[in-house]
Image (cartoon, rainbow, N blue to C red; front, side):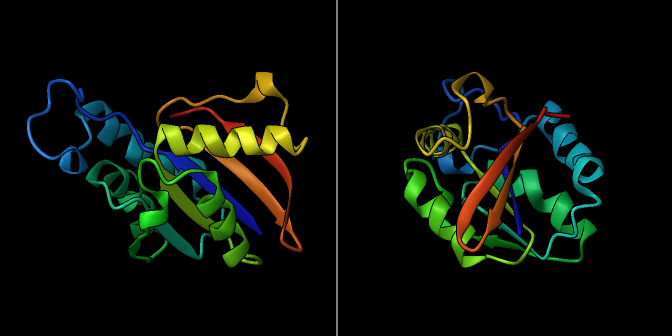
Length: 152
């Protein structure tokens, strides 16, 4: 199984946004990044697309889900502040299936720290660019590898 852990694409400036941050959309560069993710992951054989309920995350993976004829499943365990453990549980829950998981920088950072602690990933390799993807390989409920794909 492979999980594609995607950090949401570029969104408008948090400080300049008035209103509920969960509703802050992608910027035009972010929408371009979201469309370009399809090209990066078109050969992945995705069977499910899950996203933080925050609008910018959903918008990041909508083109990907459409490409595969899937719908984006809202997953609160990918929301800001959720931490690494829920992501690990999702990877295990979808064992044997290829899945995209879209989340936020803080969640991704904690997850990468977990992988560093388990010796799966070296610290210099832990990158967090917006719209980047981490390819997480799993076998028998255990993460066996992680590879970074730069943002489009």
